[in-house]
Image (cartoon, rainbow, N blue to C red; front, side, top):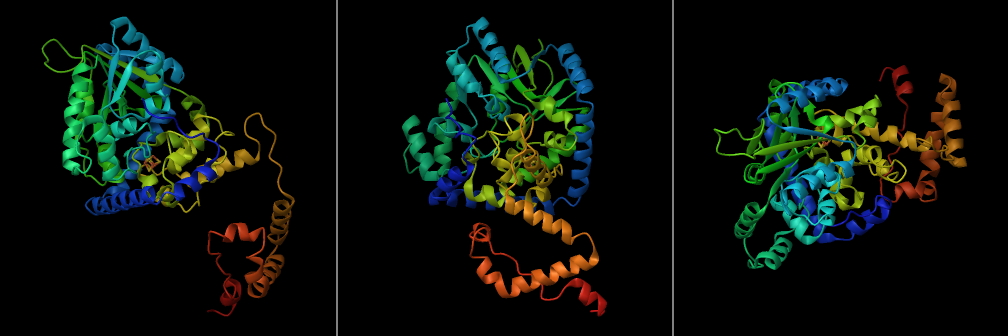
Length: 473
Ligand code: SF4
């Protein structure tokens, strides 16, 4: 069974602990640097990338606006091909659907391919409580499961592990030499996982997209393990967030181009499986039974909110994590959630509890690197600001947080200064004098010192733009 997440509360403390681990920081930095470099090269080979981003976002926006209609279309078309479609309001309902299917068939072992949706609902823990063993078969996810941890990254779960650490973990499980090469470690994992595929009575997966027009689901992966999970056992159960549905098969190619280039810098993902219906009588591969569990778990609530809705457009590529200067330093566990990094800081407070996750929207410098790399142009900094505002205003069912006197005074002064050109000029003159004569001292004293401890405060320009404009400079 995978480990427990750190609590959602306590990001600053978790971040400090992560910063004190030099090996983890080095491994994380090396991996995120590599993915960013690869993304850069992949984009150079794709001159139409910006056009694709616009196209993908338009498809997602359209899909989210008529999700009710598309989901019903998906259900109709999937059912017509022999798929059993289930609707789950929350994680518990979704897990119970699988548990009931297993119990009815006497299944006590599941082979799982990587799925953020099943992580979100803590499916492994629910299965374990019901006496069903769930084995992760994605290599990174398996390493994490063996280590008793939770994923560190949404695409690369073991991104923080060094080869030596992985050698230790796999030595304990398979007996492979601790100092084995990456190739030897992978081979040992491959042999061990083959047995798991054969023993499993059910294959469990997520899906990257669900296509309304055909009732198909699409699974992207690089290792072939998802294909084994979805073809070897007689029963396949796919957990699909309701936001994954898109209208037509013809809408897929743009996502197939964008997702791997953004996340890992690949031109295409190695395996792209489109599953339409269960195995037919004249086919050799595939499950006899295919069940799709459509999961809400708070998504309908997110859908109702016009600005925050765009977070549902996320295609889970992981590019924003790789680009984020905060994630690069503290990694995934500090966020105390299945979705770490910038998009996690937006999604977790919405899907779970805004007040429990209240530190996450502040776990960002708002530099905008996440927005710049997002293949579907999600404006993460704006969403983080919106959540900060909601928290200040109390959020659902809460009283507004009290503003400190200092903060109130600063904003009152700012509002006063901005009300006319003369006031503005006077205020910038005073600010410039303070900056010149008092700034070196003020920056070292509270409250400014709290901010400048970890940052270099910019100096004001020696002359204002207005004065230079007047002189025609
Ligand atoms: S928010 Fe954008 S960049 Fe981040 S994981 Fe989602 S799609 Fe990728």
